[in-house]
Image 1 (spheres, rainbow, N blue to C red):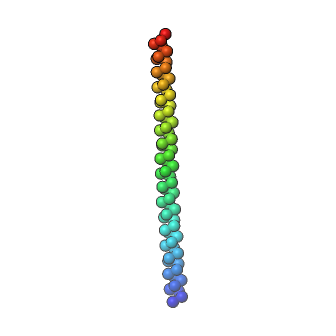
Image 2 (cartoon, rainbow, N blue to C red):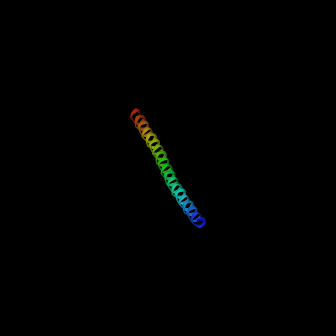
Image 3 (tube, rainbow, N blue to C red):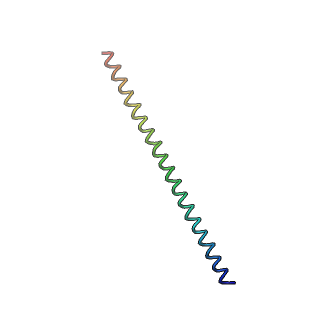
Length: 68
């Protein structure tokens, strides 16, 4: 009976460790996806601002040329 209980305990412990590892992997992957999404969002904002500044500068240059 003691051997059977020990075997069962080891089985439950191994299963719990496997579940913890699987959850760790899922959490790590979710974090990676969130970081990637944040990086893309940040890059989009930077690019949008750069394009807006370039367009604004172009408009001002054309306006100055028209006034001269």
